[in-house]
Image 1: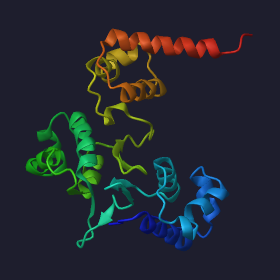
Image 2 (image 1 turned 135 degrees about the vertical axis):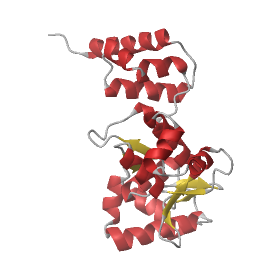
Image 3 (image 1 turned 90 degrees about the vertical axis):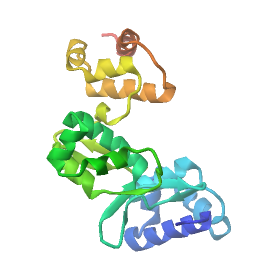
Length: 237
């Protein structure tokens, strides 16, 4: 576990030196300038904290999952235990598992098709001890059984994607708003309003920002309002 900002920065520098070679390529991928490299990694600044946006930018550039513990970023969401099995944080695994259960129909059906004991799946769903680790090979099994692929993004989040498109899948996000759930998860509503993947993503992102509860009519009205804005921005012929 990395316990100080100096350790974090020395770890990143070591990775850049041995796996990348060019620190400026990394900074470019992270959306940072060359000058930023010297400001962040100069010897006299190694103990200074980085902004979260900088941490996540570097994590994305280096293809590292990252999580914070005690205010210090940890690039260790994916680790190998002594048996060589990959593990991941339970809080992320639970979110992906909820999605898998929805796709399979029930926890019993998911257990049957993956041969993962129901007790194991139930334990992953438990909200106790979120810092405990879960075998990631379970999710490769689940993905294969459901024709999905496991994706671990640079923030460490587990998501199951459909391999044919690898596009955003709103079902992989916990939507607690009943109105938005009805609009996006019921096929007849998606068809009736001809909702595209991009529009679904926009609506979910709005929901994540405001975490509200609204009726399906309110969400439908917002959908058409957004479409109206797009038309207003189109140049007149």
